[in-house]
Amino acid sequence: MSDIESHNEMTEFYLGVDAFNKGNFPDAHHIWEHSWMRIGKSNNRTYLKPFIMLSVSYQNYELGKVSGGDYLIKRALERLKENQNSIKKYIDVNSLIHQIQKVIKNEKLLNRFNNIQINGVKNS
Image (cartoon, rainbow, N blue to C red; front, side, top):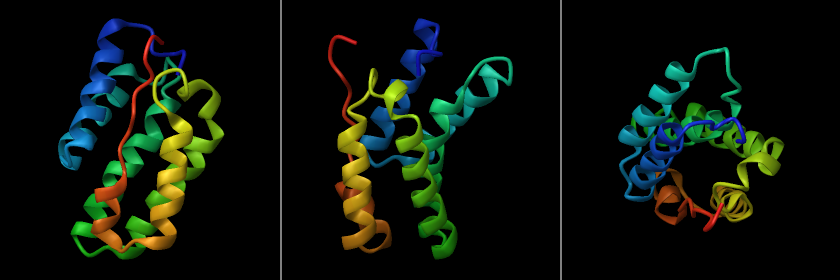
């Protein structure tokens, strides 16, 4: 996530975090997807992918696409693990990984998301 080079990118990222934490998954997805497209292929934007996947996972469950939701939440978890060293500067990635692992095992579909919060890191 060291590739978040501008203040605007960080602000936009945290707007997505805020929307996600408020349960507004479509807005979180829209914000992160907008960043993904704006950054383009010229910069490393891989840090955004797990967050996009996580927000779309909810939308899949909401539409009854259980296998798609399951796939995306598991892939988001994998991507968070793969990129945790760079992401941990901006969020408490270990907490998020733990929360996702827990809800995958213990919760049902849409209710899973009631127990996931993305916590920021102070003084990054």
